[in-house]
Image 1: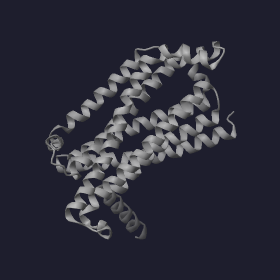
Image 2: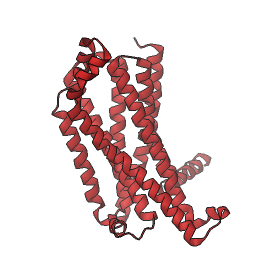
Image 3: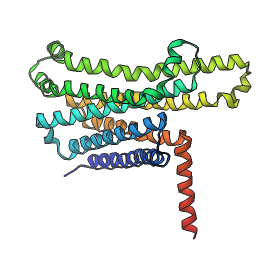
Length: 308
């Protein structure tokens, strides 16, 4: 029988899951329907169609992991089944992060204005966007494949904890065992996390150069010509905040699960982690003109129907 904490945890993550699914399905459907109507799709819509699909899969993995952890804790004693969930999480998490990175780079290339030859060459992203997204899929699949062919390191870590007498010996004995797969995964995860950060600072530089060129005063920073920069910076800031919170919560949940420290800490980490794929979809709807206007039209139509 589930405890009060378990019931509260299941209710919270279920609501987060529903909100995230509705937001991501909405984004995907709007862009997919627009694609069918116009018989063509822009680069931004291409990314905004791929990103929700990866987020939907990631949400399914996160909710499944949370429910199994609470309702069927003995499930993770099966190393093979646990490895399957870890592989799917790695794939969907990597895809989601890479696609979101592509979105931030797209904002930079379309809004920022630099005269460097490399930047001008990268502006031709429209011609190769589908290859870039396929490359993200290939990288994510490769990472998952590498982890799939390595031993179950969660199981090995538990054995080390149970047999080592002190923390110094435990970490000394685990260095060589964890170096290959975990180091590879962490190093590869740094790239899609760093690129949006670099894009954000480059966008700030572009905005500063733009204001300097047109000689705007401090009071004139609200000039319409700066709105694309400011809007993109707001979107990037929200994404970076949610991304770092997500990885921090994931580390908190994983560490406490492996060390058997606190079940409540694991639950809290899971709850915060699901905010990333759910919350970012809502931010994209608010910041994207087409998605926002479509939602407003839907609300107006529903209001009209209810008043009839």
